[in-house]
Amino acid sequence: MKRPGRGSPFTVRTLAAAAGCKPAAIGHLLSGRYRRTSEERARRIAEALGCEPAALFALPTSTNLDESTG
Image 1 (tube, one colour):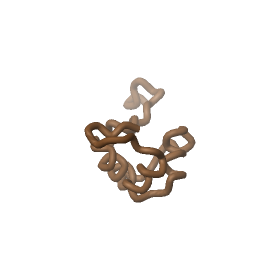
Image 2: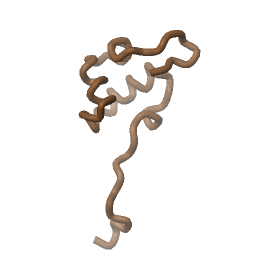
Image 3: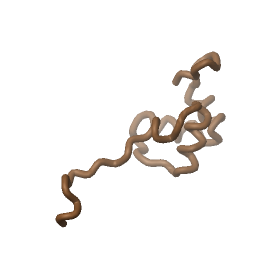
Image 4: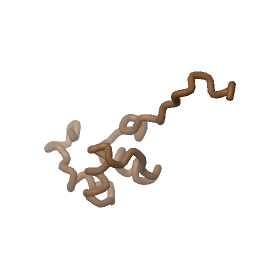
């Protein structure tokens, strides 16, 4: 996990410390075990990485191409 212009890359532990959460939460997000997180945690992780939360997380996709037809 690169830190543009800030020296050495993050480890799971250093990112967790910077984001104020447990290393397991970061590890589970990275592995895909956790597919969701709170908006607050996403904001803190993004802030630690120096980006917007949207750059880190994909919005859920719909399998229904036209949800308005029911």
